[in-house]
Length: 138
Image (cartoon, rainbow, N blue to C red; front, side, top):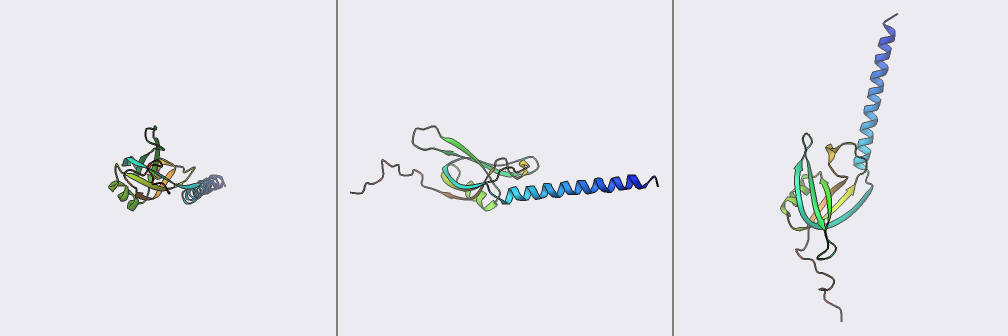
């Protein structure tokens, strides 16, 4: 019975590899389907491109400015839906409002370079009304 031990070892090894693969797939599914946070950001769409060597993803960046003259903050995001990508491509350089979900712990950059996934986009006014320019109620 010298062949029984190597055969049993190979079966156990294959079972362990299968179990690790299933656990990894479940973890990936969980991180992509459960969102840590949700929200909206508005700013000027500065950069939007399809990137990646093997897995191509849409990556974008908007500039958030709280008031005129302030240094804008950059918000980077990933788009997985082609319809949202088309909307953003048409809005390049314009003010956009992006609805996003934050997915923390996604195990690969194959799903996106950021943890923020845009689910909806709309264009906003070119020059939003500043609080000092708003009509006052008298």
